[in-house]
Image 1 (cartoon, rainbow, N blue to C red):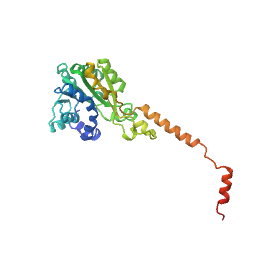
Image 2: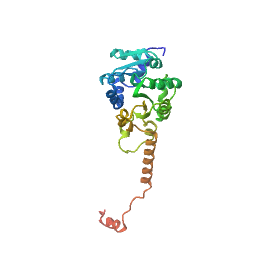
Image 3: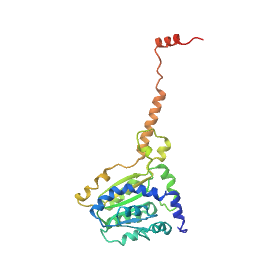
Length: 279
């Protein structure tokens, strides 16, 4: 953007604090840990690294990571922390890497910023540079959340268009990744726990506001087995989940309203009348 400080200020206001984002990206650590065992000294490339929350977390986990971003204002936060970053284009950064040289290629809220043909090329290049069993992580706003898809997505002036989860997951499958997992993210814990009644506004705005596709490159069955647990887990809330709960709440309310009030037997009513104090 023309103003080098605008996007950094925008992210600080609307993305959330660094501490918050750093806590959120911990959801990917169970996918990362088996790779650390398989390839102890192999690095990670983070595309559109922003303020560097993921890079910082990887460093704390003992993983070498490098980030690339076009926005100098965003990179200033990384440089303040001494993180390994460069200013540049994400696709070009991928093209410069040797085959099978990374354990993870990640991109948090970058997919929605680029034209789809560029995204396709990024996914192809990610597959090339990953080691066997390596992972591509792409996180993006979830248009299944009706408020996100119709309103908050367009708050960011650099967004292109929303990417439905099934499109992004199909893209990784079509490109040649062996398997993928959709992680719906950032939903309210209160909505996840139990079967409490759901309001209409919760149906509209309560679906997981972000999601990620985690795609894995082919490898031997022995190498892949250690990743089964995070790939088998279920993540987040869908629109169908909340719609079903809302309909159940409505049905229960209608039944309560229509159910006739229980009347006392005539003998009991007469006895109550006799026992009542007389004025």
